Length: 340
Image (cartoon, rainbow, N blue to C red):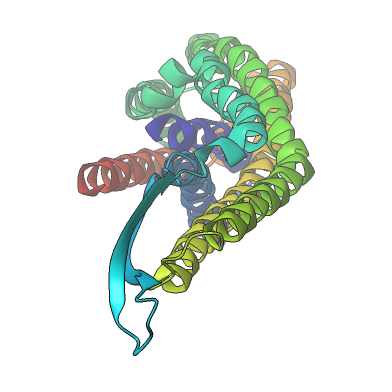
């Protein structure tokens, strides 16, 4: 489920960067990082719930061995006095397996699981970018430092001049180009992921009905077996055994239902995160283009004040925080996987 977690990270990171450049981040810095970590954990939780539900539905519903043996007097002496002249012993056994009652549920879940499995494919276009967030942060540092160097020169009374403008423009264009190339791939991936998550939600009613159908089928099958068992002489312990089987089946159905409810809840949370994610992509692209347009429009004598407005040091810190958030969540996911 690392994949699930890792995707959200970069999208929100991109928006944070772009917005942070033109607006002093201050308190927004921590809130963006918190939102990022929360979104990552929602996606990580979704992947875990998929695995949990798969595990729940794959638990067998049998076979349950039914066995009873008893003896009774089948013939008495003709002269009476209650003397038994013939003893009959009956042994009855049967294996009861309810697994077949899950056929329809298995079919519905197979489709849901297949689509859930496709989450990895939906994530693929963004995986490399997401995993390279720490490296992207370092690259941002390098380009930001070039711009900050120009800013410091101007503060010291050197310039502004065309060379400084060219240096700042090239650095920002490099960053913009990296983001633009990545965001197109990322947007395609998140849209595909959104479709997969919506399909998971669409299965809600189908799975609910299939669970109910499986429950009815198993209960009916058990009733038929109980009725057939009544034709046998030996009944000792059978009611308790049937009740134990019924309780076990109910417990299994409850586990499946609970797993599905958790899956549905985490799916909705992931969808919410993706909506914010997709919005972040559009925002980041628009804001970065605005930065470049403003830089082109700025005269040399206004270059210093323009660069001051970029708040590059704060933006750098945001990237550091986001990279650290990625590292923390990835470590948590690895520990969770190892513990499971």
